[in-house]
Length: 88
Length: 138
Image 1 (spheres, helix red, strand yellow):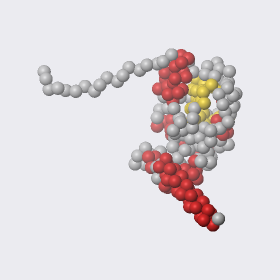
Image 2 (image 1 turned 30 degrees about the vertical axis):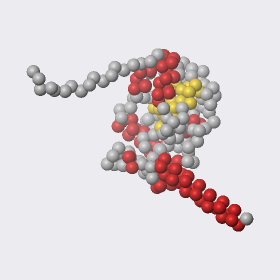
Image 3 (image 1 turned 30 degrees about the horizontal axis):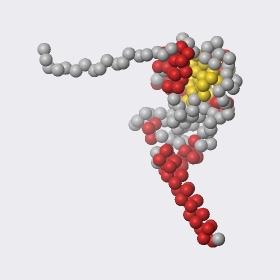
Image 4 (image 1 turned 135 degrees about the vertical axis):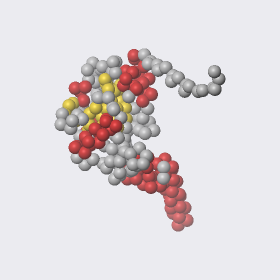
């Protein structure tokens, strides 16, 4: 029984090391892997929207910093391509 | 930008600026450093800060695509699960017609181009002419 728990512990530790190595390779370095887990994972999710769903209407701000508009106001009888991103 | 120039007569485009992906005070990227791409910003804590960075971006790249900024409630980011970058197409009836994957690995403008090309035809660009070379012959 004791032996089983020992092997289980070793297996779990090996799995964690493998996951960390994999994340480090994906992120670029062990430091990047830690920062990815800390800052990126909480925000990375696929979301619930599916093709065919109504597009959520959200309020946005213009580049002047004061004018606000609804996303729907930009729909003008043509398809609307949304490009989400940031500078960094 | 090329995609926008090619299809702006057929489709509307809107860039939505969301929370930073690699600010200096979070998961910073070496490639953003001053001696490389020089994209050094901390995560904005106020709308004014986010607006300022968005304006820096549009000025630096002379970005002509229509623009909107997500306010600090991050409502657009949350509604579209957009972080760090993502593409969608909303059809004329207000329905999601294309839902791209999350960047960086699944962010693929070619898929948007294919969607638009299927509807409005492909826009081809002439290949750039090869650089002229001197042969020394007269």
